[in-house]
Length: 355
Ligand SMILES: NC(=O)c1ccc[n+]([C@@H]2O[C@H](COP(=O)([O-])OP(=O)(O)OC[C@H]3O[C@@H](n4cnc5c(N)ncnc54)[C@H](OP(=O)(O)O)[C@@H]3O)[C@@H](O)[C@H]2O)c1
Image (cartoon, rainbow, N blue to C red; front, side, top):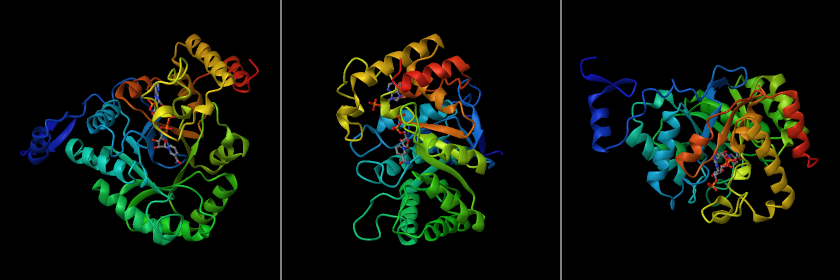
């Protein structure tokens, strides 16, 4: 213990402290788990706990974004107990850039904190040329995970996901490849993403046979997208004991005040092709105004209401929010998943366009 100092809530050795000081970086807030904001939930029936609000690095962590802003967002999140960071091989642009940038933050700011972090990545979308850079084959997934570990400077990820179903690959091959990563110590837990109920059932059957620690299906779920309710996936998750982790819980920013007065020049709708201007109809703006009123009555902001609503259900382990600034992250931490019957009914009326 003599060469170690207690800093940032834990014992750090001298070389780690020197490294942090040389980089003139902030030390994580020692009060990070004592703030009122974030609670933790188990991923299904597994022992893995995740913060109710996690941070995703899909947008704003690419080659052309401000590195200092990325650093600030990751550290602000961690300072408030958000210890789960969600990545994928292709997040950028350029593909791989988000993992590289996150790896740099880990090196420069979070060395010594690895055991407090839950880091996930994925493969399943097109990443490099040729037949082995996309899909669900053992060949692609193996190479991709190795590349991701290298980019982030990690020995293992906490959760590795197959990013989307790959109909050309037998589900047994995909699941067995994922299972092997756990056996090899390259991933602790396994997830799938964008699998509908039928596809999930097929994967669960293989995972069960292999005794794979399959813990999460990562899917789009928010007030405006009810697909997982409609196809029964949410109920199936609860019955089978794996968790739903909701991506785009703010519908890429629509369920905030961002677009209620027009389209800001620095918004995702202006900067990226993933959120189309056509979404911003009068009908949607009416819904947002009505949801805003419900939020105000609950003493919340619109994004707080939207996140609370996704988290009202115990089948949901966490919401993965995206952000373009630390202020947005701070705005999104005050969730209250308790709703009265009347509030839920009113919200349903609004979302169905009956208000
Ligand atoms: N598995 C998959 O296929 C998949 C797909 C999509 C996403 N994901 C994961 O889910 C994560 C989150 O997705 P997402 O970025 O679409 O989530 P989101 O939380 O629905 O949208 C994030 C965007 O909303 C805006 N925003 C957030 N908080 C705000 C606030 N308080 N006030 C005003 N605007 C606010 C920001 O937009 P501006 O940039 O305009 O400021 C931000 O970039 C991703 O990073 C990724 O990890 C996974």
